[in-house]
Image 1 (tube, rainbow, N blue to C red):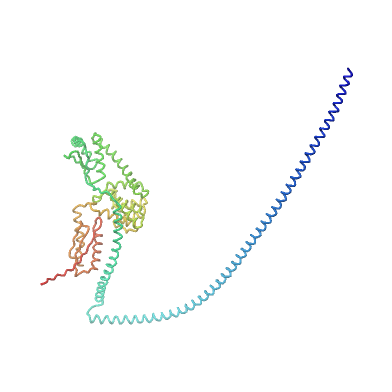
Image 2 (cartoon, helix red, strand yellow):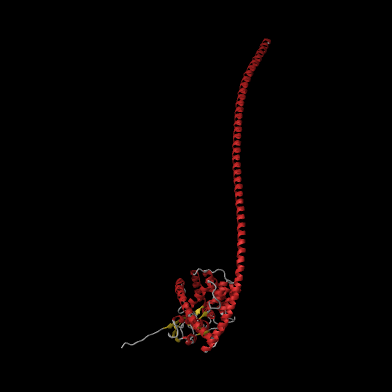
Length: 534
């Protein structure tokens, strides 16, 4: 048993020793490996350090080279700046020297001019003294001339039997006759040249304006006809004992004519506005069927309100269509009311639109402001929209309205100029005057009362015949009073004086006669020589 234990212990001891030796040898082997690894790492670190050192040396060399290059470049730049500034300084020095020389030269010139001025002053003083002496001599000669002239006049009076005033009157009269002939000749020559050139240009402009504007023609009448479907309604419109028709005429201010004309009622009135309202009222009454005084009054007030609103809306639409900018609301209402005004049978709104469009085209052709000319043309008769409750002519009323609402000066001038109250001061105002004459003179545009027409024609002929002392033999108004032909005595008046006579007659007609459009004055001078061959 003990032997076994001893053997076991010996085995353990031997194993322990063997284990220790093995462990020691393993440790010794691992230490060698670690040592080799450490040496390898140290070698790698040494190589890396050498590489970093070489890189650092390279960076230092690059930095040194870059610093050297920048230094050289900066040095070169500074040198160039220095040279440039030095050159600028030298240039300024040269300029200062040149300026100094010019100042000295100017100073010398000023001294020379001063000396010349002194010399001229001396000469002027001597000339003044000479002039005084000559003036004294002239006064003496004038006195001598006056004395001799008085003596000559005395001799002439004694020999001719005429006083000084009579002789002067004869001389002045002869001079006036000679000058009149010369003036007439000059006027005729320049007038012919101006007419030749002006007529060509005016015809072109008018042709352009009238051909580009196409207006609708509609003649205003004094009656409106209301169509009704059933003639039985005529009795209801008349009413019991004529009560309804009396109410209609009293409230509407028109004559309601109910006659045998089938399916029609005639409304008669000179006032277009009242006639239009009456037409609308009766149309509504006929459509409604209830015709009695209370209903008539209700419909009438309703239609009046509708018309007031439509008038303002129509004025707005017209201004928008023309493209003339913003217009005051009160003026817009007056523009709409022009539809219910007429002059010589011509609708005022249609006339104003014609004038606006024609004036715009004429102004554009002449280099003026087209929109401003249209605005002036539209508003040139705005005074006609006011009733008789306002005193004054439509020109004065229109001018006051446009001044009140701050219209342009050209518009106001166009209003006054189109009837000759002022001179046209702009292309636009002159275009309005021309367009107004074109619209009024268009055949069929206006109608006149026979008595007024005959009176106007007689006045024109009387004005021409009043020049009988200047050689007028007879005068005839033709072409509906738009032209007058004046026959003159060829032995009393020559061709040049006939030009002056035509101007005198035209000016007198413009001052004394009221007429639409224009009147052409033709002075005819004719010489006939008749012989008979035997």
